[in-house]
Length: 425
Ligand code: FES
Image (cartoon, rainbow, N blue to C red):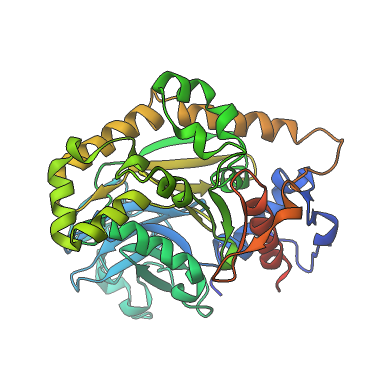
């Protein structure tokens, strides 16, 4: 495994059974910097991590700055048309070779001594080349994430040279991405609306848990739901027939389809009607036929958290970037369906209203993250409690564990998987 981890104490091991129980987690798991270092090695620099979307680099030599945890990553489309994940560190003395957020460039030239790299990471030029005799240029390319794979246009990287394939990692959660893509008449989504970045003074795992916590919305977001006169509250009440679901590998979902099917209204998931997006509705009917299009538009898009950092939040995509035990960044963008300008405009507007700079939804959550992170540093009680609904967990028709939408089913699934990763050698 290629691991950029530094300062790990050799031979250190932990008794995770004393830190993570079936119904709670010790507060220090959220704030211990040594645990964060271990997470880098065992999660962020080992498992598959979402990096970006193919539509962000549509043309050869396009590049966009991304990350895997604290590690900056340049996602490029090389001259060969392939997507590459390059480390932003010159192979000479370590300077950053790219300082722009995104663009199109045939090469990256390091500003320090002018070494030049192609967009696939190969070293193609050195200033005053006569001085370099003892090492081949082919050995001095940029660092590359060893494994890169995509599913439905979502590009993931893994620093582990060997391990489960991306499809194995996604497991049953692949179906949620398929479901998302079905909502596009051409079967493709685009990540082209630009990202908002929100820094949080809180541990990344608070976000991971919160994204599929169906218990909090009716309380934390009560003012937004009231102001919008929205029906979202129904989805997260204790009367809701929506379910929480745990897939393999720690992926979790709040499946809202049972509630939307009960309503039996197209585009109710988006709080709109077919009349307001006539072009999109016509495109869907042309693509799938009237009956199938109606079913898809009733079910809507998924609300799924792909472990550890990709949250497909119905109309948005969130990417969680862990920076330290104390800090993380939420990158958020509006989902866009390829070739559907009328619904895409509304998706951008709703995104700005809910999670933009003046939006309340994400501000509400961020306030909870920061207060919880701070609160968890109190010495007692030592553990959180995540036992809600454990008596009514059951399995769906595919064998995945489900609970009521307000239960802690997803949290328990996340922690079980997290512990398995942290216990692995
Ligand atoms: Fe990049 Fe010297 S550090 S060329």
